[in-house]
Amino acid sequence: MIEKRVIPLEMLRVACEQTLELVEFSVPNTEVVSLRYFLDSMLRYLDDAIQKADEGWPIIGHHFAFPAELLYYFDCVPIAVEGASYLFSALWPDGAEPYYDALESYGHPFHTCSAQKGAMGLNLEGLFKYDVVVTPSGPCDNSIGSYPIFQNLQKNQRVKFFDMPVYSDKRTEEYLAKELDSFKDDLGKMIGQKPDEEKFRKAVETEGIGIELVKEINDLKKAIPCPFESLTVPIISGATVCFNAHPEKNTFLNNLLEYGKRNYKNKIKPNGEEKLRTIWPNMTLFFDVGYAEELDRKRGLSILFDIFNYIFYDPIDLSQDIDGVLQQLAYHARNKPMVRQAAGLADQMIEDMIYLAQEYQIDAAIFTNHVACKSLQPIIQLLREALREELGIPFLSIDVDVGDKRFASSHTIKTEVDNFLETLY
Image (tube, rainbow, N blue to C red; front, side, top):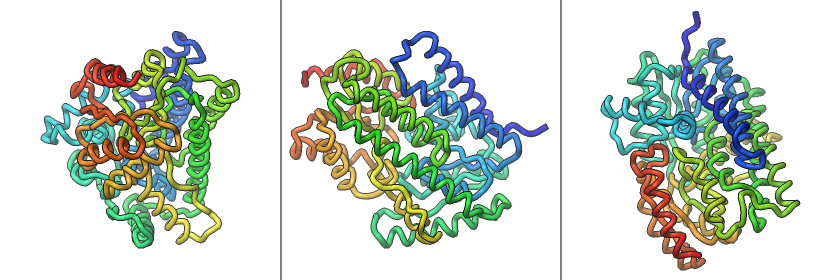
């Protein structure tokens, strides 16, 4: 009998199936459209991953900031650590909280990132069994501090880092390209496979299609009113974290793009009138993704972006030789959403958010001060002042754990946001 090594994926499959069934039978088909598309694609992705795991393919846990294309050099099952944690937060009544508690009982600090604690707790309980866990040394101290612990949670489970420099320049790209090249050779030895360049290039091509789809979606968001429901933002974040370089992500994005085009053509703002256009410079709430839909419907507030929704690079040019492709991948790795803003100096976050606020005619910014995002917390006041002085945009910061409702409840958060919005209407 084959050992079950990805039980949480089977649990998530049940949760996705039940959630989709609930939505289809109880909600009009014009509502929570992005969630329907996401769950439909996620179910097929999970079926694919579970089947391959049952066939004995190596299980590779990876940080969301890891360039997943690199893993497709091999026949393996890539599982985004942070994606598993926050899908539990979004889809299960108790979220990932039992697994946060299990890890904290083991001795891990409560103030580290719930995005990693959930999957680590699942791993500690023997539900996830990885062959290797891979991560860059960034974008935050939590990554560096938490990931080495994986090698102690299960027997014969190995952890491999690659170095992520603070600076982002040409020299960084050249350095990172060499890191990625040697990393894939070392990983191949760890799992007993030789790298297959054709498979890698196919994954890069697949991810490039996804990048273009996100760019088209974001171009449509410039329209007033925005032709997408606010729920689109946390849902795209989930797809960005969970299944990069997989064809099902592109199926989801393509369906979402066509939905936005229909709304744009007919001048439809889903869920009612648009009174305010906002950006959330960090993350939206994963333990209560439905709050985005509530803001649309009850407050006329559109969420256009969080930190994961805008991509600042173009698809990789596959006409180049492998060294050129890896150098482009290195640029992507250093400029991935959140990595770009959190791994370096404060000016990058400030520049990016001022750009989005100008380009998309934003009325306000709401910053979720996630307990674990210690590298972003010193930026909050600088960002507040920059948005106010440059563009006159009001700014709210709320203390949360985006994956654990016990830190700050939905009621507490909604009260703070409502009080802020009362000053704007």
